[in-house]
Image (cartoon, rainbow, N blue to C red; front, side, top):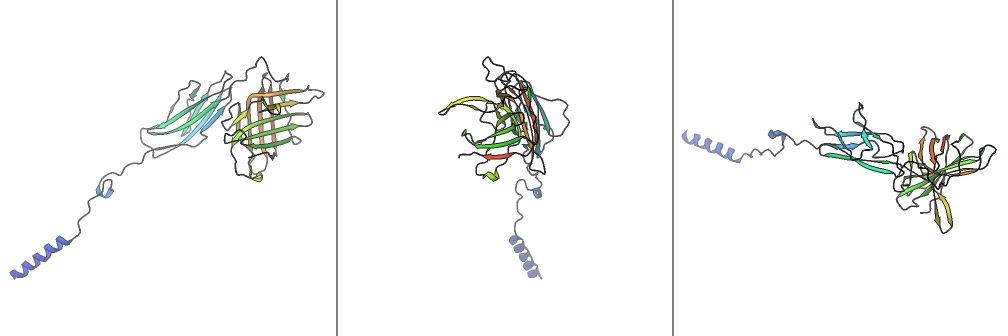
Length: 301
């Protein structure tokens, strides 16, 4: 009996010795009773990350999203320029409204605003066109404000010239031709590149374009100017022209500032466009159009 007890004890000891060890919990393993590390917050701009304001000043709404929010944190805007401020009383969630003051200088200006949420950050670029200053040597021969009458009889073309400036940005010129009143305006805008697209695949630029001489930014409405090349002088950028009629004298005017907006009309192949611009004498030229626009492809690359 004594030998049987000894044998049983020996077997038990061997069983314990051969059993697998209990694994040591790894750091951060919930089964080990420690708390899993919380992922860091991420701040993402949902709206456009850049904006061009008109010289008269306006508001710009920025919306954002926060992943992995933390209690006690809020989004803050770091503004270093006194012509940009934050609108008070905005109640929309995840929204900041910037108020952009009037630019009374002829020179355009720009600033980068950093949004922060703890260690997370994102940037918004705000640019503003310069004011239209009547100079001592204007190119315009226009003597009055003009409201163009644009209707279904207006000829409208969107001419694509591609990346002629070598900036990676596409140049487009919109022509609005009123053959009844013998007047025309052409508006040159800078839009995102469509390199590789066939003529049939080209997409007409949409959005807001603000008068400036900044050829390095999309959203620019290039102001009118005269340049010289091997063929001589020619008018570049945006211009208005009027052929003499019974009620209007002949005129030619560079567009010196203002805004041009165009949007696609959902569910159709038509567009809604309007412009409110000034020449270098301060004459205001306005017009609105709704209808089709014909693309012409003049790319050389």
